[in-house]
Image (cartoon, rainbow, N blue to C red; front, side):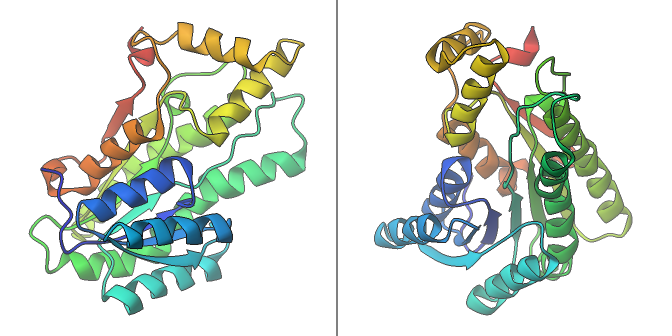
Length: 267
């Protein structure tokens, strides 16, 4: 189940957190993985860990806001492993400021990474994904990291929600466009709730500041209190969902969103 034997995957933001866990899990499932990130040292360490565990991984410096960087990443995948079957648009940033508080520079950064990065990755990887799909019964795959904030509104993070809502609908539209073009590239999104990563910790810090204090642990406990499952997510919870969407087990899913949030948005 959820095997990726013979597949080649490119993952953005794969140095740590959800991306790092996804890279390790995909390698364990048989994929050859290109680990892309701007955190060069941490990403290289992730590659070492994968290779030492018997997997196959390669590092590439990937700034998702740069066309040239994306092209180099795709070229690395095809030159190192001969093709590209899976793209995971994982890289993202969280600012945690409201409409009236955010600066234009912060807004531009939020959009550049969370939206432009997903668009560029999709556009630049499409030819390689299309070529690989010709020799695969179930085609190639794109998995976009959205969020529960891309499904429901947010009192405290409306602009982050805006970018993730964009990713949600871009995913559906990409699936439809590529289907119309008969590319055999299916595109789905995954929607994590609050996950215990470096970005998650930043969320708790910003929540505490928005409440006029610095009680990060208190903010974490408040967030956990809203989750019916009674705990916050961990990177592995999301990585397993990404693995499913990337595998042939989800071959009839296209333009869909997989929610992994402990029941948060079921309320």
